[in-house]
Length: 467
Image 1 (cartoon, rainbow, N blue to C red):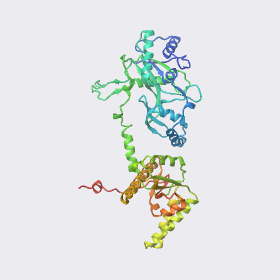
Image 2 (spheres, rainbow, N blue to C red):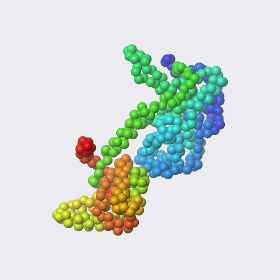
Image 3 (cartoon, one colour):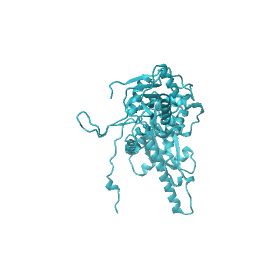
């Protein structure tokens, strides 16, 4: 390979409009720069002008957000503020959803797999370098097809076989800063397979595969820039490659089954979440919980499985107010009576009541979970009715589990208390609940101040019965 490669930005590329012929514009720019295409040249073209030329532009004002988009907006808004990043509107989030095959992460940024198979932030949607305050550009639906069209025009006009790369800038895992990557190709293999070659010491290379079109796109990016440079087309000359009639961007995309970061990390993250959740009975942080975060967790909880899909759960949010205080006072009076009948000492009763009162009164959020008997199946059979009631309890327990895992996933701590089981009538009367509601559990929720030590778990051989 030659030791010298030229990277030449083409000047005079006009602002591109829908319907413009990109190949013709590039040939005109080459002519104005006193350049002609030669066999083995490579033209790297910014995705933005391809998208504009084929009309992949939309006004955000024309997009109607779905319920999912609004939920993601509520989740992401505080995270974007924490990271001092622009807040995505529900309309933009909907556009990302529409362009995505799968949402991999939705935190302060959305990482998705696009319909084209690329894993990137925000489905490659861009608001920069597009005319109009609310206009956005989408990735081309088939960048290979666009690259092939341009290559064929070049060959028809000049007789030269030229590699064509359509590029965009993507961020990377574990690294700060965007780099150029290829999203469409014609005339050049996306990868350069060096397996079987020998290194300087005569050792055979076993695994070396070079992503040559990404290297070329990244090199071109140094000239293109990211802001107002106005150089969306770059000529690379001197890089030796074998011209191929057929190439495809999918050759450089890693398959899901071999992608440890996409599959194993998601699995490990979920399994780790299941094992990391602890009952938190310690002091909570003073950090305020936005109500929309609580609502987001309850949104997850409603997807739990339930008998007959009855969804028997009913959640009541108890704010830090007079009603909560009155409820806890009434419940504690009942607790005192029960402990007295149990023969507990005054000191034991005082400590127990004080601890319970402190946990429930000072919790940033106190959530009551009830079973609604109206949704249960009813029969003229006492045993069947009783079993249906048990199925209802199992169902709301599943919802409660989903709820606590959602808390854990969003950095909240919680504890599940069964105190309402012993004070059903008091809770119903104090809160004026419907007669069909059966109080089942309290959840104290807040941001933790410290970690809770993992309790000892029984070994598997003690919990698996062998008959």
